[in-house]
Image 1 (cartoon, one colour):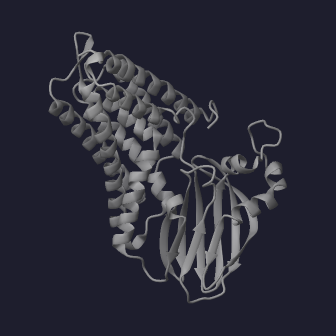
Image 2 (cartoon, one colour; image 1 turned 120 degrees about the horizontal axis):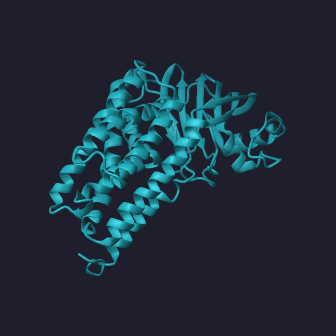
Image 3 (tube, helix red, strand yellow; image 1 turned 90 degrees about the vertical axis):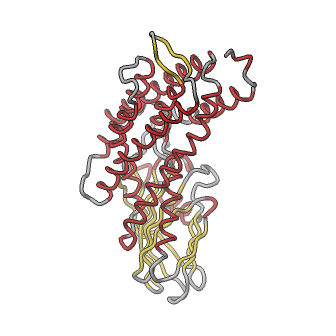
Length: 382
């Protein structure tokens, strides 16, 4: 089939989808998050708020000398501005507005870099009312930013993700519904696969050849859609089973690996998957590749759960919800990509532009990630 026999909108749609995925990736690492830990006992409020230095710099411009590094002196000089900026975007109410202040300043390191730590204290007007939290940090600059909340309210544990469409949330003392927690972690699993750019690239590297057959040193389109679908289901299922195993083991504290090793190995998995498209070494059993590297990706997912915090009273349900959410997110990507790829499988546009071009782009991006993560370099502006 030549490209002129394909409706124009199909190549355009597939190109848009691929560009949508690849465009932010050259400098992408981990989505922007802050970590808000609060304890509210009666009227008293305490806690800490971890905000990435790169996010504060993006909003306030901390790097005065422009050398790409933020020093303690640069951070300390702007502490009043940082406090005003952050507290102006966080509101607590319990029978009226709670008065929150920054009691101390620290710096801590997360898997994606250095964070300013604001030690919080304060008091609320009443001790027996529901608690309302309003969060608007960075939303005007980055719609993908999320605030990860871990709350202890009069002895009961709660967790939530604060997003532009969930900027204000209410909590009451007492254990939260297990079904509600399952639903929350289901949504977070879906969201994480969609913003987990390295996971998406690995999945796409395995999906790109699913509508093709390698023979006689070249590529041709598969004869039937069900052949491609069968291949994809094996790949996605193997990836899901593998990452579910290591995610569960890591989330339960049974196995722990250094985050730098995990992030480097994830980048390496994308490099190898893309390279295999350009110079096939593993053919016919890509599900084995998906399973082997899915074990590594599971540790990456576990780092997200570690930041979110798993509620002990609904540990299994929350873990199941997150795993299921990741699977739903993957299937959504497959549902968009596979029909378009199948329709274009016999065109030069797909074989040369999408398959070869996409694999080369994926390989390049993943190599940059691997160098940055393995050797603690900064090769991009992200």
